[in-house]
Length: 132
Image 1 (cartoon, rainbow, N blue to C red):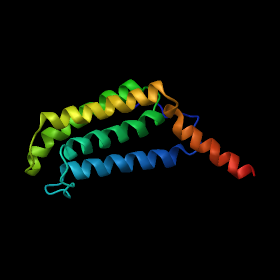
Image 2: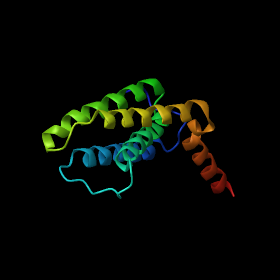
Image 3: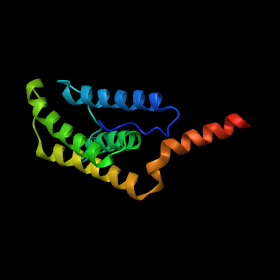
């Protein structure tokens, strides 16, 4: 993995939270009988999009090379689809597409909007509050 951004004061906390989120997504993705989502059209695909988008949003602020983070997360999403077959679940190309769209969408938000510095902004707000 690329080097963690040195600008973040609480990088260990952010890394812990990001890797915990990753473990949760992997656990839910690979468990044989995951909790059911509400019966809404495409809720499964929206779940995939949000899960991988959240991972990209977190890791994309922590590691220097966002393109590499995006590539690795897209590959992870594909690998998980293959691994799901070992747990009695189904392989779905549309799940891989939703995973990748989540990664690409979050990458675009991080790259083209101020959200790319959300964690740094949170830290600066906390530092300002500490000084008061």
